[in-house]
Image (cartoon, rainbow, N blue to C red; front, side, top):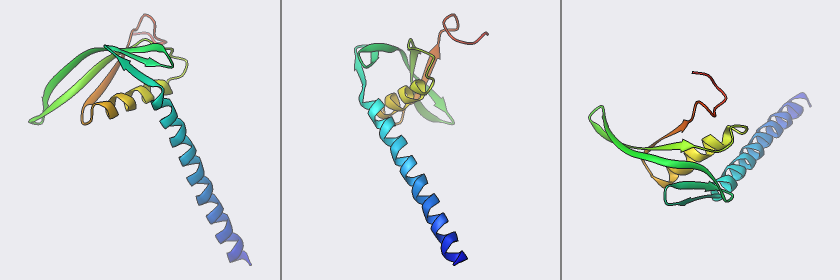
Length: 111
């Protein structure tokens, strides 16, 4: 009986972790769908949250690396949006590195 309860608890735990993981992936996909790029601007739900600043190339260990640099203009209240933005731009430019800059005057940090 103890083994049955132990196995049941393990299965319930693993199942709950899987469900939570799927739910968070769906939320992330939903956010990515709301991003839109027009010219140099990146929009989220119709509001500009970032602007493409530069596309650069560098050599890293003898390999050519492509990098996109964006200036973040959105709210810093939800820092997850910055991660979602990086994911979106990374998916858009496969194999490129993405860097997001935050203006220190508007940021919530002191240099």
